Image (cartoon, rainbow, N blue to C red; front, side, top):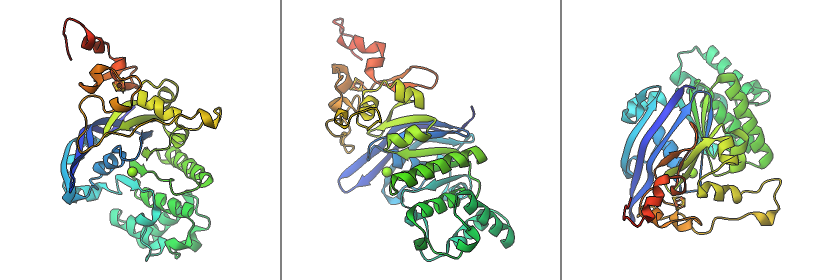
Length: 335
Ligand code: SF4
Ligand code: MG
C-alpha cells in the first residue's frame, strides 16, 4: 500500500498559566491511501491535538513546541507557511468536527456555504459549481438537495447537519479527511448511518480517513488500522484484527475490557482504575506505569522501546521486550 501521510516524532506542547503542557510526545504513524486509520484514546490523550497539528489548526499564541515531520505525498507540510497551508486545508486535507454547528456558518444558506467552498478552490462557473454542490449533497444523502439549498443550518437535524459538513469536507476532492469524534453528538442510529456514509464515500472516491475517537465500538465498525494513544504517546498500532483479537499493550487490553460487547454481561465490564499522568510533568518511563497491573521496576524508569509483533503490529511495552529482563539481572546491567 501507498503511504499518503507519515507523521514522525511529532511533539506539541502548549504554554498555559499553569506551566507547559506536553500534549503530544513523540508520535509516529502513517496513513495508507484509501484506508481508515482510527486514533483511539481517552479524552486528553493528545489525539485531537495530533490531528490539529496535521492541518496546523493549533491555537497559535499558545504553542510552545511544534516539531517533528508530517510528510504529505512526500513533502514535509509541518514546514509550510500559513499561506501554503491554506492551499492544503480543504482542498487536499479536510477536517470534520464533532459539532457541525462550529463548522457551519449559521447566517448563510447551506447552498451558499458549499458554493463558496467550491469556488475558493476550484475554477468553476457558477452553474458548474452549483451542479457540484447538488451532486455532493445527493451523495451524502440529503433528500431533494435542489429544494434545500436555500435553507439555513438550523433548519436541518443534527444528523443532516453532519452530512452537510461531510459534503463540505468532500467538495474539493481532498485526499485525506480527518474526522474528530464526528458522531459523538448524534444518537446511535444516526451514528451508524454516518459511518455507513463514510464507507460508501471511501469506496466511491478512494479518500483516506483519519478517525479520532474514544469509542471502540465505532472503531470496530470502520477502522482498517488502529493507533492507541495514551498520555501523548502512541502505545500500540495494528490492524483492526490485531488490536481487537491480539492486543498486547496492557492499556489496549484495559480499554477493550471496559467496553460493552454483545457477548458480555454488563457486570463483566472492568474500568481501568486510576487516571492518566499529569502532562504538565509527565513521569519518566512508561506513561501507563501507575495504572498498569503488570508494571515492573524498569517501567517507571525507562521508556519502553518499540517491539514489532508483525509488519503492521507494533507495541511499546517492556513485557514484549527481551531486554527488560536485564533490568533485573544481578550483573547490574541497567537499561
Ligand atoms: Fe505496563 Fe510496563 Fe508495559 Fe508500561 S511497559 S504497559 S507499565 S508492563
Ligand atoms: Mg478531542
